[in-house]
Length: 127
Image (tube, rainbow, N blue to C red):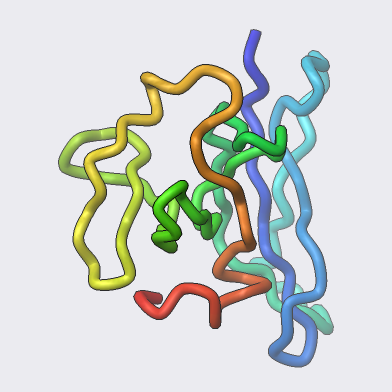
């Protein structure tokens, strides 16, 4: 069974602080819930959730929605949900979608994760 997991970006004083991971993590039957801050006054801000795409880069790092990756040609791309094709895709900084299909990747994709839009927004100009 694959991990069904998500992460929520937590910001403190307008700066990224950490991730909260939730879902069915580590092939456990236990469900860890998301942080819900409705009506609660907390000293931090919780942003929406990013989904684990069930793939890894060639350094064996998990790939998540909103991760910034660099391909073998040196292009900087964003992992994003493609509503039209109903799958995860890669987005160029100019906004065009890259025709890479994650479903065809086994372990060790031909690119590596260099950051994400929460911690490293400056790495991807198209955000």
